Amino acid sequence: MITHQQSTAAKFLLYSAAFVIVVAGMKAAESLLVPFLLSVFIAVICSPPLAWMHKRGVPYLIALLVIIGVVVVFGFLIGAVVGASVNSFSQDLPEYQNKLRTLSGTFFTWLSGMGVDLHGSNLKDSFNPSTAMSMVGATLASLGNVMGNAFMILLTVIFILAEESVFYDKLKAASGNAGKTMAAVQRFTSSVNRYMALKTALSLLTGVLIMVWLMILGVDYAVLWGLVAFLLNFVPTLGSIIAAVPAVLLAIIQLGTGHALLTAAGYLFVNVIVGNILEPRFMGKGLDLSALVVFLSLVFWGWVLGPVGMLLSVPLTMTLKIAFESFDETRWVAVVLGSGAALSQQTEVVETEKA
Image (cartoon, rainbow, N blue to C red; front, top):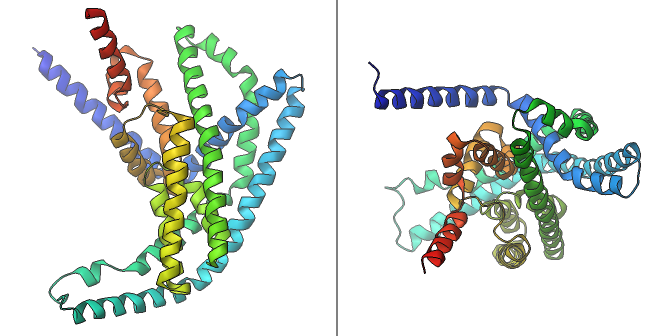
């Protein structure tokens, strides 16, 4: 006779095995999943202006053509910047790495002269700034590879937007609980649309300010680092720090320590103003995700899908959270993923009623 505890353990093992199989499949299908998820990501961003134009009386086909035209122009500009900068940066990368090795060797020699013994430690082997430049080059190259699928991504976006007009009708007809399903889908769409609209505007402001500051200082590839700051600002918490590392290292190599400190100060100032003042003011509590969950999702999706997974970590995690909220058996998972704001509000309501 199977006890309740044995049944629970069997379910846990079954769900864990299914999770591992799904993750392994996603990892193996990375080259197929990344363009598709990017297409969905772009389509979600394009959906509100498309609906807005359609409500204003613009024929759906004309509105779709306008949106696609804007996407093509924006994608062409990003592709041109990434393509030209990545090729030039890749050619200069060995020289930058050699200069960083020389500077780090000088730094360790200075530490030895100050009485810090490094011979018995692994610090010299572990601390290698040139590795950071190699990671930057590899990340930019992977981004360039994604841009190579631009035509397929654009084609998928067109089909998704064209299908959107009848998607909700299909969902109503297919779902046994249409009201609950539609509420979950609409909540997800409105939450992600609001998040992406505000985050895109603030990220664009961050990228432009960083680019202008680096141009004033004379740091090479200022446009590229501005683009990197724009993209990595979608990554919560760690994105702005990661974006600053290559620019500061390049400033040390090219212009010296003083300009490197000015570069770091510029990144710090921009991220304090945008991230700590403007973003909380306009975005409020955001998408109600725990800070730990945001960090773990960044690591997880980055491992599964690469750099693009890091950029899409929050929308992907939010999708799972809303899906868990839609079913009674998995609602507890959504509660664990949340920031706890809803629980605090419920507690306050209960205490008020008791009073």
